Amino acid sequence: MNLQEYQAKQLLAQYGVPVPAGEVCATPAAAKDAAGKLFSGGHARVVIKAQIHAGGRGKGTFKSGFQGGVKICRTADEAMKMAAAMLGQVLVTKQTGPEGRLVGKVLVAGAPNIKKEFYCAVLLDRALSRPVFMASTEGGMDIEQVACDQPEKIVKESINPAAGFLPFQGRKLAVALGLKGDLIASAARIFGGLYKTWWECDASLVEINPLCLIAGPEGQESLLAIDAKMSLDDNALYRHPNILAMRDLAEEAPLEIEAGKFNLNYIKLDGSIACLVNGAGLAMATMDIIQHFGGKPANFLDVGGGASQEQVTAAFRIILSDPNVKGILVNIFGGIMQCDIIAAGIVAAAKESRLGLPLIVRLEGNNAPLGREILRGSGLAIISGDSMADAAQKAVRAVECAGAEERV
Image (cartoon, rainbow, N blue to C red; front, side, top):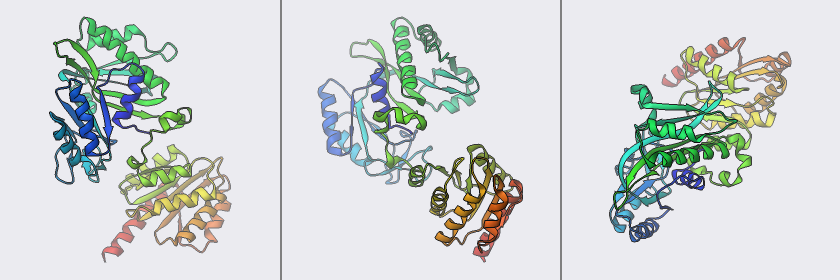
């Protein structure tokens, strides 16, 4: 589960990470009031930031033609004008894809005088099976691009989960970023709070980009988390009802929400061959082999190791809700799962939906012969795959033939 920027900042602030004063608003009038409070509190400028689950907002373009989802304002009236241009509009960035995201809220926050931008984040290093703290002097940029063009600019510190993030590691990272004097201790405290947020919230990623060196009214320097991103481990959300309450369903794909109701792991892709598979590893291998034989997968769909007939039927409904789907490949290896139950679910779902698309099924493992017999006796035009490669090739060929017929 992903959080909005303002939500990530709320959690970071609870763990001692300094963030700008601000207020999230859903109307232009509320944005004007929030900006007025900040100006009255001594801020010379405020920033209006569109709240969506995507980066690159500042360089994004609204479908209305308005440029940029991050705007600096010097008056409350200007803040209201900028908020009005963003709210209710679709913002397209390089991370949203061409469909963009609808902006339902904006964050109105103080805009300090920034002298230098840094990057810092905590995530899991799967190769080491440990948390890793990453920091860079190249804040405000896409860290993926920095890693590609200037990998030496990224400093990494592996963390022993039994000991946690230690103060000396924070000071080491601060020095690596070129900070001096009191800023070293300040950065170390912020890094400690960032790690504690990651650990105690069961996050998969907590990122501050940028962490800024700012100048106060009298020239004094301090550090402030200007922007933040946070992703949570869905499997641990039951331990955090307060964080689960922050879930924004408007930011999630409707089909993925529907799949979640049936405990199905579904991610929509842009291909034409839908996949229904049991097991994440097998699902990824299925997508790979479709691509290998010249097709494009329309989704990742893992029904799990013990799917019921109801789940299989729901999976078909979700698959068929995608207008890009031109064929379906079912690839099942029965271990815990029984292939005859899956076969019965496939038949029921195909009949219920009056399926007119090519359906290719490969069954192996527990009760596979019985499952194949159910499919053969269904009276449906189901194409059987003898192996994963055979099934993938038949799926690609069937979709190509169906496409050719449509063009004729």
